[in-house]
Length: 528
Image (cartoon, rainbow, N blue to C red; front, side, top):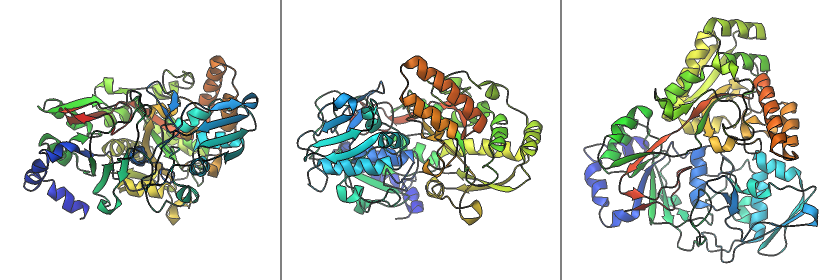
């Protein structure tokens, strides 16, 4: 089945009889979900897309999970690490009875291989690995870290919520290079991925894992008891907002993760539908540069574009005119976090006009080179912010190649370090979770270690120096001082341009209850 065929099947003439009939007694045990974008990549270590992260949270489990207060709690682990030898030895014991979807028990060696693979990609994982002398399995249930120095944030690293989750997978998969996607999706999480029902670009299917043993405590974000109340969850990719809205109103789908902002108010007025904020920590829009290749290997050119960026325009496009759905000015750390400060924010309070931006670019050395901007047209929020950024760049005299494509193509292309003329890229627009910007360990975008960083690959040694100092900070006052200095450096070197914080509504049928806030999670939620 091709995407066009699925969309046609969801149209008024065909979908209503078929899907409405499925919502009988058996349908009560099936949840139909419209994800934020197509699930193009399945390996959570191979992809930086949040849609892949959400998929991973269904299939895989983690040793620890952040709760609603963003504190780590045991998940696959039986308890918090046993710390000995003046903080240089940490032992994690697995809960009894954990099984992978293929029936094999979860062993410590699976966890060791999974942590090693994750740590090659994730910024927090890289920091943990730099502090690790050795990682081994003492037996089938005990994982032992021998550390070069104490690393109190070890559970936080293994619990993180952003992209590159520390997903535990079988050793045979975790032993593969992180640049190579795993050949099949086998985890130990609350759902089993049904690979033979996958239709790329259209559908992904999950079935309840009968062997999953939830923790015996209330769920809280990624922590606690992950009780599943549906036998089957179907992800249906519907890139057209009007089609998705109509399907939700007719009861053909149950939950639309991120409705287009212009369709939220009509949905709020529709009987049988409720609208809620999915993540109270918000989402952070950003314009990311490829810093490996001209002209954006020049931080002065990057800074000129930052100075010409209107966060108000970007957020209005992303979240509408109602300011309760967005917040500016926004810097490089989440408001309310210890690391947040006012340092440099005047740049966003008084952005340069087009003529001044054009002069700043010329003074910085921009000579009219052709540059591309990857824009995901099938992801409404990203598409809206991309259009605003594209318009700003054109008005500032940038010779722009606006590459309108699908999100799956964007997520694959941004992994390429080749020059833009050879299939690479110059700029892209996306968003990240506010919870991923509370500190420099979680904020992958602010790393400055070149080709070892995530896509964009900026080389900013001062940011790395400050980040390392943050890990050794004695108290919150010291962390706050580091946060101000990191933000000052980030405004000078510009690893990316923050576009603002927005709060995304989610829409679901009113007979669904128990939805957990944070990200789209499929435990806890049930049909009343």
